[in-house]
Amino acid sequence: MTDAGFFRGTSTEQDNRFSDKEKKLLKTIKFAENVTKKVDMSKVKLETIKPWITTKITELMGGIEDDVLVEYVFNQLEADKAEIAITY
Image (cartoon, rainbow, N blue to C red; front, side, top):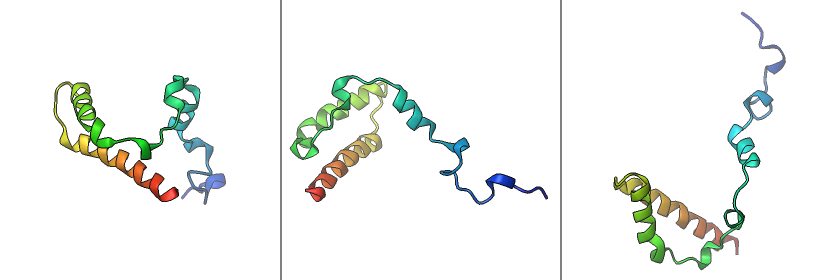
């Protein structure tokens, strides 16, 4: 049996070979200024924009209505709102 040698007992976070490539890519991409600003979700009325979100997702999916994806997006937005409410 061969010995793992130097990398024996190290985790993937400690080993540079398994770095988060998506995180590196996000650092190299230049985003528009309006995308980098944080939104205070406590001031957003989700009920107002839910119909727009639904139609936009359906449009991006090529006309296929995906209720699971739409509900997932709503849950993610509501979770952000709940986190903000807890931190204040």
